[in-house]
Length: 433
Image (cartoon, rainbow, N blue to C red):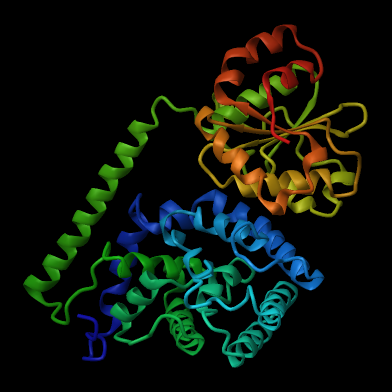
């Protein structure tokens, strides 16, 4: 099957049908990851995390180990993003017997890695990104290969597709290529092929190469079959029946997931509680810009809230990230942020913390009186685990606090009736730093 295209079968005979079924599959990578709103939110936080890696390498404070490093923090946040990136940290783990990847104990290689990241953070063109890759490839740093593309994707999603075993396998299956994992020249060749395919089928995919990479992932992991060379009669009917079955199974899984969450509070519900509580307590309220149109209690989540941030916040360093904070309470007379809330329902805690830092350290005004991570009761351990990472070692003075769902559910109505200011919110929250 893997060489069917080289036998003369054009992709155009079946790829549109394949992609349409894939896009409609609720549990396929397109709907479960590519359209996932948290994916978009994570771009800025991952960029900021990579900037911290570069800064530590330049200052000589990065260290000689992956565990506990700023790189571990940012790679972990990528690995949390659905199945497509699961295991993304494996390539960066230190293998002591092989002494790879050789960017921890070798200062020269470490600086070259930092220079690659710095160049790709700062540049805007495809030529500059490719030149930076060729420079690092020429150094032949042991164990440092195209897994780095998973970092570069979050810097340049229209230039650099992600890369892992399943994506490579999917590309080989679809095109008949024999791309090998772990070599930059092989990755760049696959990248060219993916870009050509993406350009041809742009109407079904996206400028963002995450879409076509997700398709390759689902093909390479065996979720989506590619048809055999004979597409006539019985063979074609069987292939289409297989696709229909996959879509049906995906719908069943999606329904099961929905039922299992029936008694769980949704992200939007918690935002709605915090919005209503803030308005009742007399604050102006900001709802994350990409959530304002969400349906909530017969209206929209942004109803009755600010439509623009005060200029001092919007124009401050990190203002784009501040707009994505789930809920901000502001003093009506001064327009200053009083409290900020990130709802960590099931998403990356790292990204929410980074957005809080953008608000608190943006330099536009004094830090808010309260910074709160609101999460299910069972996620407190995860929240605390993130905050002990070295990347967040400097935020102790910001008084970041945790609010369990159960406390907010139990006390929000009482606070709305009898509370004033921030005292009651502080009382039901728990210190994290």
